[in-house]
Each structure stands twice: as C-alpha cells, then as structure tokens.
Length: 163
Image (tube, rainbow, N blue to C red; front, side, top):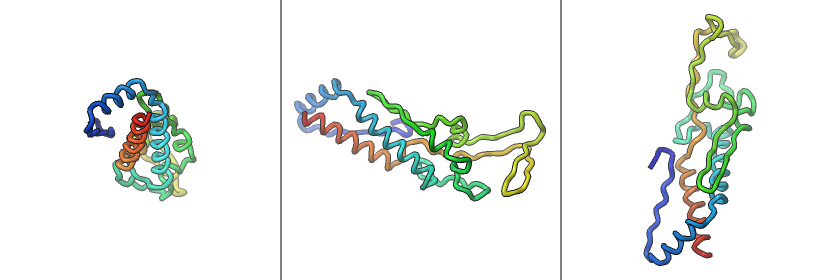
C-alpha cells in the first residue's frame, strides 16, 4: 500500500453474491463516493489548520517565533484556498494558494537581490542571510481519515449490494 493510501479488505463467504457485487461495482458511478471522500479530507485538512495544528501523521507542527496561530498568521489565504476535485475513480485534495507548498514541505528563503533579508519580528527589524521555514504538513490522510474513508466505502458498497 502506498504511503497515505487506504486499503479495503473484503471477506467473501458467498462467491455468487460477490460476483454480482463486483459486476455492479464495475458499472457503478463512484463519483458520489469520491465526492464524499473529498469533502471529508477537505474538512479534516481545515481542522488541522484551525484547531489541531498537527500533520496528518499526528505530529505537532513546530511553533512559530511570534507565538501566533501557525498557518493562520497572514490571514485565511491557505485555509480559504483548500479544495477538492472528485471524479469517478479518484479525488484530489489540496490548496491553491501560491505559498501552500512552503508550508507543506518547508523551505529556505534567501535574498535574491540583496545580501540580507530584512523583516519585522515581534516589533523588531531583523536582518538574516536566510530564513528556514519548517514543514508543517497539512494535506494528507490521517489514521482517523482512513477509518472514515473505509466507513464511506463500506456504506457505498452496501448500497450497491442492496440494489
């Protein structure tokens, strides 16, 4: 299983019923399932940014030096750019804000046109040759998300079997 993936195991006692269900699955439009999974993952990503301040693997984000709400300091840019795209066979969740990748993966910022970066921190002017922004992963599938996705998929499969 790929990192961040979800695995669904099916125990089949009655092969005829399983074959019928598999045939229905092949013909079924799973866009609604993928839409529900996308909404779930978008919601849990917002919760990470607004409340838990943890990566999908549960590790706490490094604190920032100002002591402000990490990833919300500059406004709602990151949170407001969260979205998902669902199709029949996949869902993508992410953030469209131009600096989202910096927060997800971390970055080292160096001056491009002068020898030093100059910025304000806690009311003081700071000069630095570089600034390291630690990764604060916010997009991903947590253990709780995996459980919720399995429930959504199980409900979807049960509804197919009931048809």
